Length: 286
Image (tube, rainbow, N blue to C red):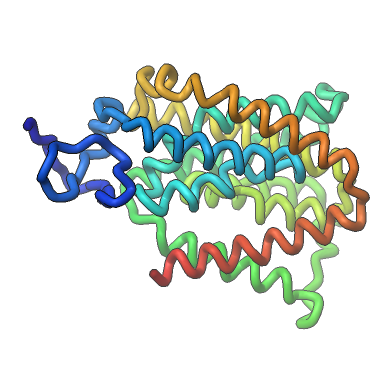
């Protein structure tokens, strides 16, 4: 059987998951990230990825965001963060577009949230470039700590009034921060949830602002992965079949979201933040 050339960035694929087809009677193979497009996925692997996409898309539809937030940690259980991000790039673009359109008034939303999304895109470019050269586990741990501090900020009486008092500065700050974290970990949602809650955004405003940031961030991320040979046109054909599953689950989630009241929605967001923080901290500690 042929072997795959290795470099300093190697993906450890556990044989038990049978994620990739390997030569028979051989130990788990270490695959070069730059040769990712050349890998052949097993049928079981494609089913597993489809299930992850289905779950992540339904959750995204029900709360307005969360596709990469759910899919990335699950995929990262049997691959590395870089590969997990590559796997979610195209489905995330589709999910973001539909989520923005589903809330209506697209041009109004684009004008209102343009500055936030622009800085999210710039931050994503910075974060992605760092991800290509530096291990991002430490940044996932930092993100978890920041979320915990926010959730308990009411008890320690931290004030966020400056967010509404200085809207342009806060959009630049939170957009850039969300983008950097998104580029490093594929997760912008916590920072954008904090911004949305403190800005007193409605459910619709939160959904459109967040997805616009995700959309521009993913576009620049695809470009950077492509020019660094981490993503090729082969991935488009490989995962095009997954888009139907993603669409069905997404629309199912949107139907559920329309029945959720505003107060319950905010409670769900806070609970989701807490769960995400714990997941990030556990993943870093393992």
